[in-house]
Length: 199
Image 1 (cartoon, rainbow, N blue to C red):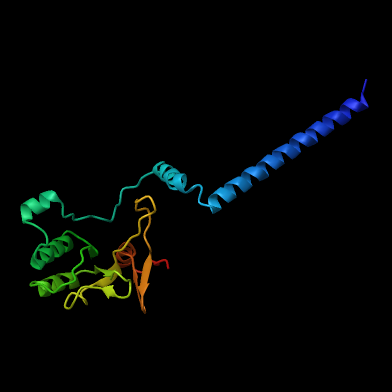
Image 2 (spheres, one colour):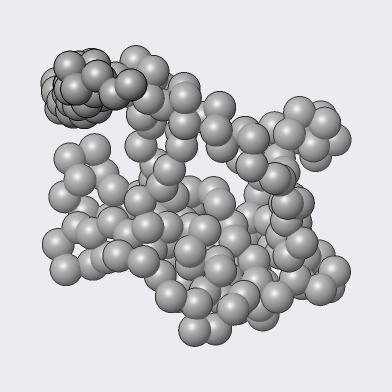
């Protein structure tokens, strides 16, 4: 036998549970929004993102080879800075090995003996040279002639996150009327004509 009172009670309870879930979801959403807006997630947001990124599949670079100046290199070739003629030899060796482009990720801000040799080597293959902003960010510090015209200029700057970890780079930086792409984007544009540089 149907009891109308029981049916009404059941419907009221169902509505109450549904309203409770909606209220809890709204409260949770507001709590997350307020916490994020006030920086309350700052201590855990980046480590959580790092953990998620580490779960993504890794793909080894197929078109990039790094010539690294490491401790064994310094022991074999002598202390840094190396002569510009030695850097020229490295550029020529990279070209001979099939490099489609060369990035010289070293600040070369002062004229030195051997600059003409290095400039000639850089002109023999599409090249990128690194520039940086002065401490006030008012002007670009770039290689002097004859290196200045031997390759495309790109910025080698980066910003660390608040926890001291490098996670991203700025695709372009500007000072005055000169905007330079990041080294990675400039290199990709040399190797792949028409590669779009995000701004």
